[in-house]
Length: 325
Image (cartoon, rainbow, N blue to C red; front, side):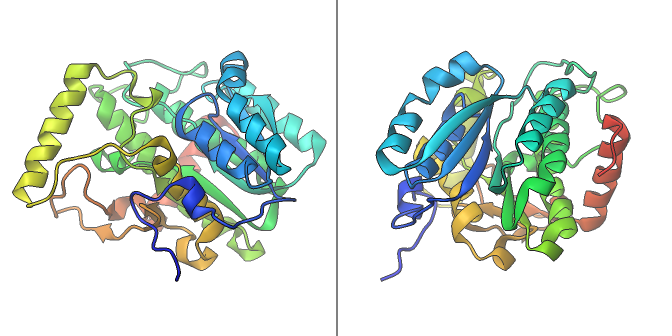
């Protein structure tokens, strides 16, 4: 009987029986959390995984199990340097991989930051928009020639995209009062829109792109939230769930959080996920902007999948980074 996948499925359950020998995958953000688990699960099934991280010493320690599982199952794992808050670093990483010329079957743009204090990347962009979106925008577009026909791009988005649409008139909060979760929402909406636009550009050669929401997981991503903020958020969600007659909120485990990334990247049919937003190992449905949904309910706002919005973001992103793709 075919296994039914959902919110509690883990990476190993999603990939059960799958052989990735001969497959090459790039995963960004492999120094903690679901990036490490994504790399481990793929390497444990025989894949050749390249992991990108800003702090290579930290990533080396964090991926010890990845290397063990790779060695035990005929896979491989290597690290490359990548600081998404520096376009110089992004371009150097891309140039190094291009010079090697080894093709990738799947690129998983996993790295990111959340709810940071107001600040800027080395290039002067608001931290979350710059690191979460613009860094990946340049990296992935430069590496696009290396993605094999039939390959995929997976961008890590979030239900947090509901906090805000992108603001292309003021992406760096020069005229808008800064709110860390609004900024996070803008960057996560951008991650979805990037997948929409990338999918449209590359589907002709069989390369598809999808955005995924991993779910609520306790990882380093939440390091800028104190315990009181986190508890207030959980209390609010539980009030909403109780009103809907549902059970209290439960955190996902890290293997559960990484499951949708590998499902969308390797298991789901390409036409099912291409240009779409996925969560809990299935494609999310559009929820109209005027419909109130709780913080952890499923669904994606229409603005995050709007092709005109995606094209406007692409054009603005090219303008900001000074590079056309």
